[in-house]
Image (tube, rainbow, N blue to C red; front, top):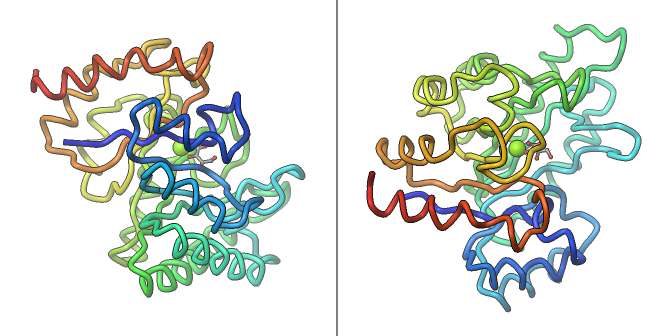
Length: 265
Ligand SMILES: O=C(O)C(=O)[C@H](O)CO
Ligand SMILES: [Mg+2]
């Protein structure tokens, strides 16, 4: 049976980051994930995790300068040392926080840059990162992201992600399958999940439009949870959504989902 993890970068944003751990615990979660923890020293995060007995399942590499428009730097030929330093920084956090998965964002292809060269650099950087993460038994994740939200993002195709993983041929590189992005990129959610399921290492969810909680949009999540239960998915499902009204009122769908999965219908 799968486990839901609360994404503390998108949930409980009513309170400061370090206060979100208590909120997640109160809402009944045992597992959490977040995007970028780097403004806070890992020891402070660890203290909150221990205090509330929370397990961390995922976070991201540093993405470069987000305010200036970076959405990952792993495709940038002129920033390879910065990328390597970012891998070490992510490992420092992951070791302190005992986190087994890290997501490496690709990046936005700058105007005028050769796409072919960017893929080459991306591949080289992923190879480096996967080897470093393997030293610590950490899985490296890559996630296709839709170009409506992130115009120019290099990795926006599931098949490309899969081909890249096959080419790298390193057992600790997997796909982060975000149902929200996959809906916006191509649809065919269940069929494409089924096709690539052996290469998938983490799931995230949100509904479309709006990227709010399941039940607010067009994605049939009860059906998806039923499917994941049927195929025996035993990993995590990250709730990477922005609550439509408030975090506390955004979990109504969750009781039904858990009940559905338990009943096995
Ligand atoms: O945007 C997403 O879906 C992600 O999972 C990344 O972590 C980027 O924030
Ligand atoms: Mg995601």
